[in-house]
Image 1 (tube, rainbow, N blue to C red):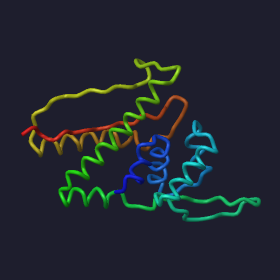
Image 2 (image 1 turned 60 degrees about the horizontal axis):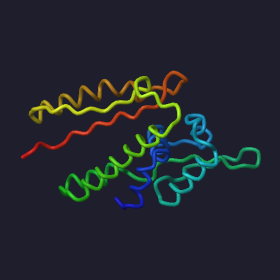
Image 3 (image 1 turned 45 degrees about the vertical axis):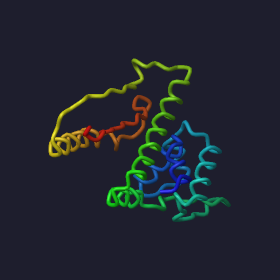
Image 4 (image 1 turned 60 degrees about the vertical axis):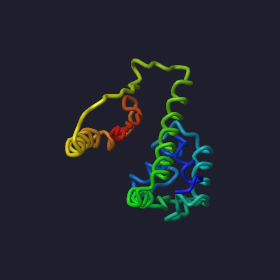
Length: 177
């Protein structure tokens, strides 16, 4: 995975756009604006253009509406292929690059959050923690499966005034040898 492509995933707005388009298997700018009212229209179009230019997104349809063209966007890459290749080749350097980009993205989210004027750490639903555990590979798989079962219904929730976007991150560090 190129650094240029990975840079898109450290941008919180582009990451949200990417995941929404990927989850919906295609979407128009109009639908994205409805989904993300906090993103200004010019900002959205700028991000879409950059993601198109770098091959992350592709236009899968065009509809003419009152003299304008409404484009449908979909993901133009299979992220699983690069990750699968890194795992298959046991590419430690590639894996560290993915992790670094991931952490950078999380840091970007926290930086943006902590710079807001109306921050309310206690009531905003922000937290992080670490829990040292001793577990077998089977126990780890069982725990991750249970976490997935708890989180999946929340992933499909629609945004409402009461239901705001949170990103739930899971990091499982390798065992110390």
